[in-house]
Amino acid sequence: MSALPRLSTIFLAAITTLVAVLLYSPLFVPIVSSFFTISHGSVDWSSPTLSTYVALAENHDMLVALRTTLIVGVCTVILSVVSGTLLALYYHGRRSGRSLLQFIIFLPFLMPPIISGLALLIFFREIGLERSLLTVVIGHTVFVLAIVYRTVLMRLQSMSRTLVEASYDLGATGWQTFWRIILPNLSSAMVGGAILAFALSFDETMITILVTGTQSTLPVRLWAMMRLGFSPDINALVALILMFTVLLCVLAARFLIPRQVATERT
Amino acid sequence: MSEAGSTLPAEKRLSLLVTVLAFALPVVFVLVPLAIFLGYSFFSVDQGTIVYGFSLGNYVRFFTDPVFLPVFWNTIVLCVSVAIVCILLAYPAAYFLTTLKGRWRYALLMLLLVPLLMSYVIKIYAIRSILGLNGFLNKALVALGILQEPSTLFVFNMNAILLTLTLLLIPFAILPIFLSLERIPQVLLRASDDLGASGLQTFLRITLPLSLPGVASAASFVFVLAIGDFLTPQMVGGISGFTFGRILYSQFGTAYNWPFGAALSVALAVVVIAAILIGERFGRNPGTSA
Image 1: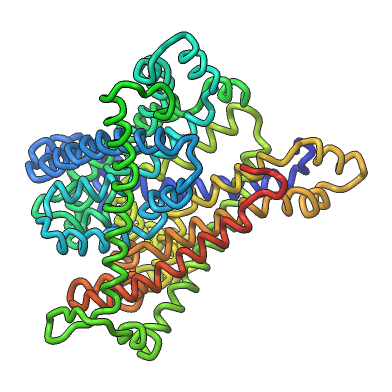
Image 2: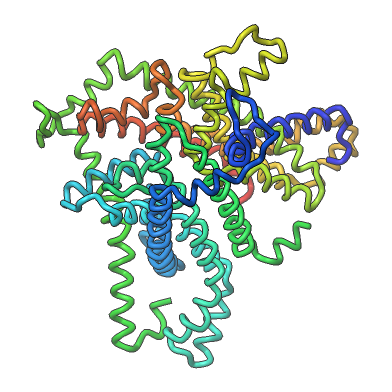
């Protein structure tokens, strides 16, 4: 595609720039306002300040919500990685019933979160489980399970069969083969899946709104505040979260993209 | 891996446990809730309490009441529009990416995907402030002389939902289109060039047809995400921007009619599943299994 005429290259570059501007403008607003004051649509560039970050450190409610989000995220990661890996190990190499159960695992991820959330809400009510952080963790785990399952399954499928066979030939038991051969080979996929699961859990809003009790996670807290408008320290929080998630994403990419592919592409 | 070498009783017990878990987890936490939810759609409500008896009343009401079908239809049209606008913007951008070399290509792709990581709620809020009466958009349009004075055209109506959803969902259109464009073998393009085709002819007869599966996947992704979203229409839709998701949600809040809400969810699920199946059907590259 190197023989592209100059005019069409300019056109394509212009559209790409427009898309980038459209995508970044909603990020730009809170980040700029975390350092500058914005009033009536114009930025006061003259006086940069860190006061929003100081205010954030004193916003007790927000910090509690942040802590709740982290607790939910960590629990979700543990539950989804353990069960997602077990499911992947179980269904790998098994044909009977796999496609149906795989479909069921993927349903909460494919369905609109409002449907998954409402179904869980009614389910919890029917079995008499009080809405709490436990129900939030269950909801998040069900939601992200498909991602972890798929990540681990794909790694399993790309793993050479001869490794496992060699292990058995050398007299290792199933247990030893699992701990010494299979698990080490899966570890980077599990870490990558865990990071994705955490990122999804961290920003999950709709299911959480429906199944949470009195404690709210950060997105739910922000959602509730949005009607009234945000205080400036929220912008500081948002800027910090963005930096943190970009970091997480870079990490996830490192674990998930196999090295030979990375070099092949350049 | 459990079939071979499991001679110890502890291992046998473990593999039995794994088998039970493998079936129980998806069934108990996904299938059962969805089945109960489906069941609810056949119940009814009398004086604020749920009557647990079979009735098709909710579905009859959905199809006969003059309120619900038009909103349902308008929401589908809205989300199809979102998908179209997203693709019109994403296709040239994805195409531009594939013209770049090596490291630049992936760096720019990452750059266009990073906004997905930003908190969804915050993005909606930021977009609302951009679209609002005192927002950047109105400022820019007035400064450019396109508008005489700031307009309320862009916030708290259907336009606002369309614009906001488009901004939020463009990355989901870029990725599948980029992947399908990237998969086109360079030899085909060179052959076309050698045979004397112009750049436009090569694009229209080779690149475009071969990238259509990516476009279909992109359309399906964006549509499904748009129609399932409740947060955006609730926040930027105002009173006139009433979407199906909002009506559905209100059945569990102010209207307090869970069975009817469940029936509306079934209607939504049917549309979503149809969109996913269409995306699957046309999103697969002919000749490749992946």
